[in-house]
Amino acid sequence: MVIPPVLTELPTDVEFYETGWPVRLADTDADQRLLLDAVARYLQDIGYEHLDVMPDGELHRAWVVRRTVMDILKPVEFGERATLRRWCNATSNRWCNMRVQIKGSNGGLVETEAFLIHFSEETGMPARMTDAFVGPMLASTDEHRLRWKAVLTDPLPATAEDDVQTGDFPLRVTDIDRLGHVNNSVYLSGLEEALSLHRDITTVPYRVIIEYTKPLMGGDKVELVTRRAGDIVDIWFAVSGEARAVAQVAATVTKRP
Image (cartoon, rainbow, N blue to C red; front, side, top):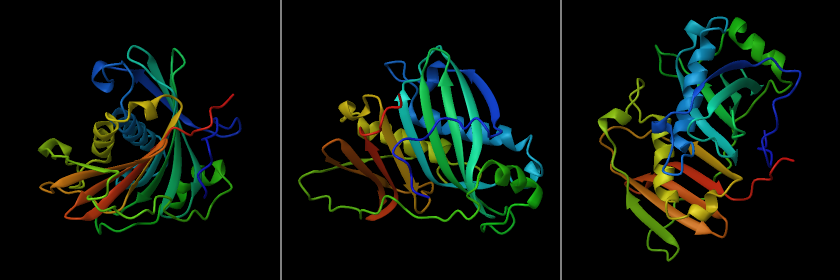
């Protein structure tokens, strides 16, 4: 699948799972806007809630995020009530693209899409979803042969280049999740750190894409490598000169009418 220039509205003919909660203080920045790492936690929370109502949901508790796209169309802010709607827009038998729309009660709007891989908790390898589990997803999309293709393919730049900035990104014990990896939301807090020097990029609307290549583990010494070109900021999470994840933040999303 090609990522569209802007993620579309929720289709009217698709069944979706809905939940919601207030936007709390710890989810927001000094300007009261929902943080990128809070958006990532919201995606995890609705995902696990959704499992509770899915057929065979109890058999599908282990997932790894391969890519997340976030279109920040209008900031969701502190004090709003966030309504989240989740549905599948492409699938195969071991992975899927799940869309989540986050709407604030005062008009905030974030559209997201995540490429998720289902893993076996016994083998630690990608595993087929059961027919009962994947059935509702097949019904919500015509794309039943989803394939992975990276969209962020630029190699880790040399830190000596003039337009490259670097900085340490220390990991904490609390950053490790149940799979033994650094939780994917932690990477988004790294993006917030890197973007603190490029606030003009995050004037809405803007797009965030992050792709995870190899997990960060507790004890890794992580370096944030940042390069800007015009209205695009590329960010690599590097360990010993190896890129573990790469992100791109662009002030080029088409605003929906």
